Amino acid sequence: MSDLVWVPQPCTLPTEERPLRVAEWDALFAERLTSLARPEPLWLRLDLAGGPGVEEQVRELAARESDCCAFFAFTTTCDENLIGLDIAVDPEHKAVLEALGARIAAARQSR
Image (cartoon, rainbow, N blue to C red; front, side, top):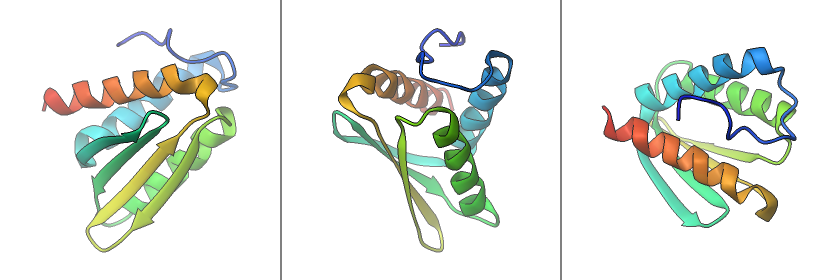
């Protein structure tokens, strides 16, 4: 999924900045993802390996994503070694969540 055709219309991030944002998410997942689950159709649950500055990185990236794609709801939970990142959407944006989940799963398999 190298192209960005799956990015939904409500996204307000300027088109030229979208590949950079996707690259930020991809790097985070490639470096830190330890597990991925889909507890419900509108909810992804990710566990990310913690480390110095990682919690702040995750929270800041999620906040920026929420600013341009208000349909995402991000929740983070943290302990010493693990950061939980829940990503939820409304029913209208289920396909976006599915595309994101597929992208994350593919990146995980390519490691």
